[in-house]
Length: 270
Image (cartoon, rainbow, N blue to C red; front, side):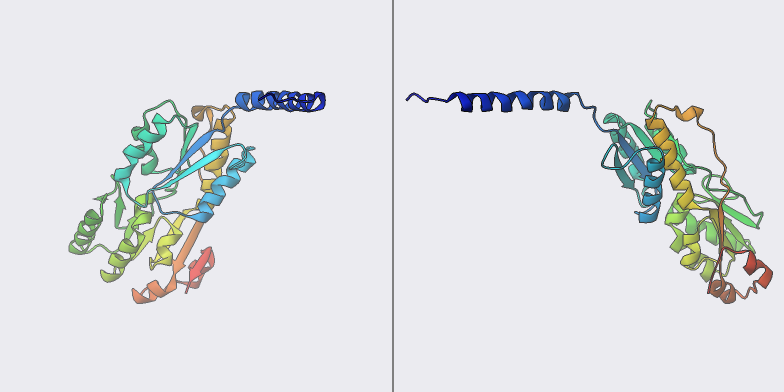
């Protein structure tokens, strides 16, 4: 069967094909969107993720438009970290972003790669010099697992510790309910590295403003995507802190918090 194509149809077909050629060529030349692996030891937290994106935006990157962000919330399961980092390295993501602390050190060891890793600012601003401190692995009480936390509190009770300082670490933030519960049961006044611990019954918390910290991580990640070397970026010390007191917990422990101290707090939980 013979098909006859008119001159007008032929020109239209050729014109359409010609118009599609440069579009296809441009699609092939368009660079791949950079991928950022966002790794946190805690649970999914919308405000923190939003703060990270705000930092990226400040550096000129908008998620879904010119950068892709993969969010990995480990929920305190540190044993997942080596496999996750190996996967990110194998896929050669553009950068890995993680908050500061002992977790950041573990992430760096797990990565062992040329992929830029962006750490947050320090989240352990000061040690308050209380009777005992709980840290991983420093401090006079080591606790890296749920059972080790229970053992640490047994030691506190045995030694009749009068107070406890919990060092800044995302693992302790993920175990905040256990820590606050054990402190209440054993009637040990404790200071925590996060506001979240005070919300669930901890006595007091003094820590960096985590929203600001994650925003800064996002801003640094954007700078790295723009070509900056992580080693050339200055190490920042936090300047914004949150001091929170739980008065209900204080009353349960028989502690009277002076009004002058309450006025110094950023937030008082009744």
